[in-house]
Image 1 (cartoon, protein in one colour):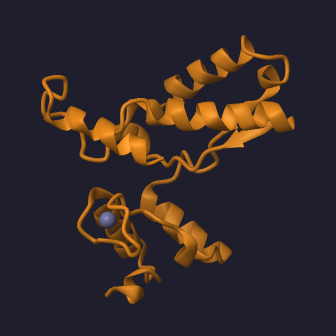
Image 2 (image 1 turned 120 degrees about the vertical axis):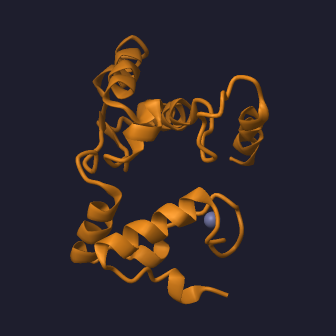
Length: 151
Ligand SMILES: [Zn+2]
């Protein structure tokens, strides 16, 4: 969704007040979950699964319990099928390093995960996403398979 990058202009605008993290995209989760809800409605899915962790909601209001409760309320008044769809966030009680540790224990193919916001073919290791990822792997004591592919 390359057009979402354009919304990053708000960082330089008067609305930011210097409190907006560089990874902020206005209404990002409303957009993503809106698309997922349309798909869930079309396919008859019973749930939408989000990978948000405990650290996300400290930074982004649109990753909070309150936000998702409001979104589910919107589902309830949307279509009959969507009214039955719930949002599940199985990682919401885990910090980012705890998610990395759990993923490593479960044998998740971490080389297929992506955190970089720069949009390149390889992680930039300078953006907020890459720095957060590196810190989480480091704190978890897990070797990041993507760090081994550094160019
Ligand atoms: Zn990056």
